Length: 441
Ligand SMILES: NC(=O)c1ccc[n+]([C@@H]2O[C@H](COP(=O)([O-])OP(=O)(O)OC[C@H]3O[C@@H](n4cnc5c(N)ncnc54)[C@H](O)[C@@H]3O)[C@@H](O)[C@H]2O)c1
Ligand SMILES: N[C@H](CO)Cc1c[nH]c[nH+]1
Ligand SMILES: [Zn+2]
Image 1 (cartoon, rainbow, N blue to C red):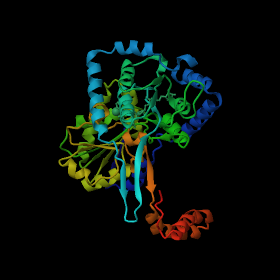
Image 2 (image 1 turned 90 degrees about the horizontal axis):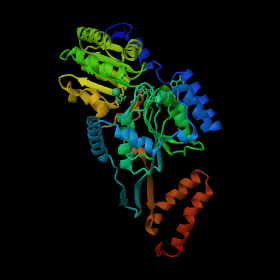
Image 3 (image 1 turned 30 degrees about the vertical axis):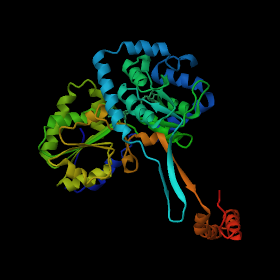
Image 4 (image 1 turned 180 degrees about the vertical axis):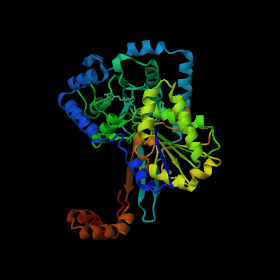
């Protein structure tokens, strides 16, 4: 049974706080295991990666077989049936069109002092894309990772995706091929993240690691941050549906289950203005769980982390939503646009009952790699910007230096940093000797 809460209950505040604090992806035991795995990969490189892949993915590899060969990729791609290929190509085209709009612009202007200022965007050199593969395989996550990287202009793209028991989904390889990935490693988990961050004899390290994964992947990304950049914490999936009684309970049940079926650590929450509708959705979830293929995973997630919250009105729903800061937010209410304008913290918003979250997972266009575990309070879904960095530019003329240099000297003196002040002062002295005629060229 999921938890049932109502804002009218006397114990609502502590129960809601406990719901927010549930440890799904940063449990200390996960972090301890991950710390040991990273240390092992740093110490023993390929040997550790191979041993850990044998242990967690039941797959025997050698340094030579860590990556798929071009012949293996070509053979797998050949096997993809036409309709799957067409669907993947449609998704890739829509994702590319959406992300091309995110390309940032350089800027340059001259301010009143005469200084020319600005910034310029450049891509990271090498990105490591993590594509999950433990409990399901994710061709869609290949596209969501690789297309923004390509649009940004990243030169080297490597991908890691586990293949438990050696079972490969050919669509994963086709998606990688379609989106310009140079090397595909059949490894996963914390060992893959560590290998991409620190490198091994076989795996050249990257500058930035992106992509979603389970609690072990999320913990590993947290730990390698600083050695490499990371996009965000995109861990076990989450959905929050805000729905009034004017919805089909079965549709809402399926939307909740669509994320619950990812992982036992996933979380699905319904906030509704109608307690009876909440009960109807709970019954519909139970009914669907009788037959759903992935009922074991979805059922465990719904039982352990699911919740149905009844609120007095939509303004209460908006306030609770901002506290949850969900990865995915579905607004199934009469005026979803108006409600969305009262909400600040969510990774992705799906407006209206005709926009199931699953559309966003595959084909809508926006990225499905999104912040989880309340990190949408301070981070955003994967974008072209995640693969770029901004370098600032400044050019002084003699006039500009004469105008703002003395203030810099004053501030340097206030910090007791003499050489700072002198590096400005020496130039000002020259300008003052020459009566300000130096061209500065
Ligand atoms: N937030 C997002 O944007 C987003 C997008 C897609 C998927 N997801 C999430 O990604 C996750 C995918 O998880 P998955 O398990 O299918 O694939 P995964 O590739 O993330 O994890 C599989 C790996 O986990 C490691 N692992 C498993 N059990 C372990 C243990 N006991 N100790 C150490 N390592 C262990 C193994 O190395 C294995 O290769 C799900 O939680 C899903 O909800 C999130
Ligand atoms: N819902 C996931 C993000 O949490 C993404 C995904 C891929 N395939 C299906 N779903
Ligand atoms: Zn999904």
